[in-house]
Length: 89
Image (cartoon, rainbow, N blue to C red; front, side, top):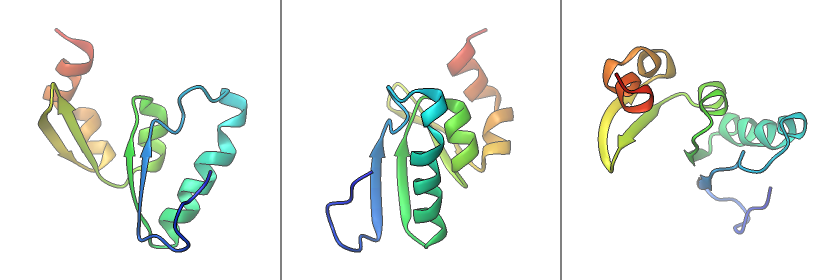
């Protein structure tokens, strides 16, 4: 994982798990956790819900560009609008 600035306060990641072999995913995710634990703000766009649920403290869920939910992973996971958007009815 590369950073363009020496000490950024905000880091934007777009699909960091995409194309990464599941057995090798531990290292980049550990790096993201370290950055978060150092007090960096990490904005993560990711479709892999296992990755999102394991990394994020707060989530915003979009459906067709509209925010449908906001909160911690446990609340998001149980939100009916999120379930319907991802799995349908």
